[in-house]
Image (cartoon, rainbow, N blue to C red; front, top):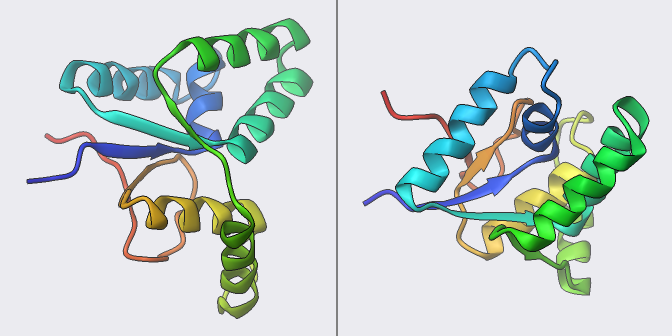
Length: 139
């Protein structure tokens, strides 16, 4: 049986919030599917901060606050990184071959891996870390 745990990345949140984004309809369908199928959704504080800042700068400060209010009133599980998670992300970042991996991506991969979450909902390239894959809607 496929796990019903999905980790949400900043690109997915932003596309969902920005109605002018070219992939807004697609991400809306994903979130609708998650709700209908009873998926457990996860994100982390760093992802929330990244998304908040992007919404604040590119759309509006009031919408960025509404985003956070919705997250805290909703049922998305927020993962709070511990010191060991930060150190593992730094180790992953330093030892990874590609220079395109950034700290936020490494931290998301470590947090997801340590909690048994193998599927990431993102609209960006996902580095092949810990056997994780991008979540796709089943056909």
